Length: 242
Image 1 (cartoon, helix red, strand yellow):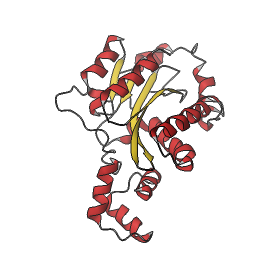
Image 2 (spheres, rainbow, N blue to C red):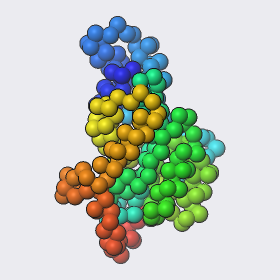
Image 3 (cartoon, rainbow, N blue to C red):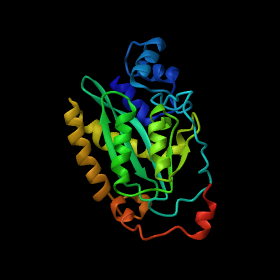
């Protein structure tokens, strides 16, 4: 499972057949049936379709994805959210985060043992105490399509957009964040408990937001760029919003 986790983070387009071949080359005597079972246990699937943490509820409203071709012009223009798993020595927990698409700043994050809506709502509430976006983007997971979650956004007058099924690149900034989190913090640290994970991730997100220069931001930090919230949308940019 450790190898599966690392291989998937490095190559999220690998399906069960290729994962089986990779594990066999690494010396593991596994068949595809076992690999499929372990991937389901970890909530993994190839990017097409997206990681299996995101199951829609057929009774929940799904909003269209209309951000393709739209340029994010400043902080609080578009926020994005997603869920990933964080492995422990005996099992794994779930991590949700909300990211500002312009500055790449992590505005809020939460850990949870069960994969439920409440910890995503708590994350949203914390982020909304910092600011408010024009558009909120997520995948079609049941947590984000729930009436409680979308209702909170609608009540604040925030436009809701959702990535298409099997289109991980519609939420690419959060996908890149997960790679950084795992390669720079989770894998080197090797958490034993939920408490270890919380303290390690707390340190990492403080570092990520306030100390880590970001190449796409001309080597400024996400917090520095997010602080420039005096930057307003141009009339052209505002008119281009779907």
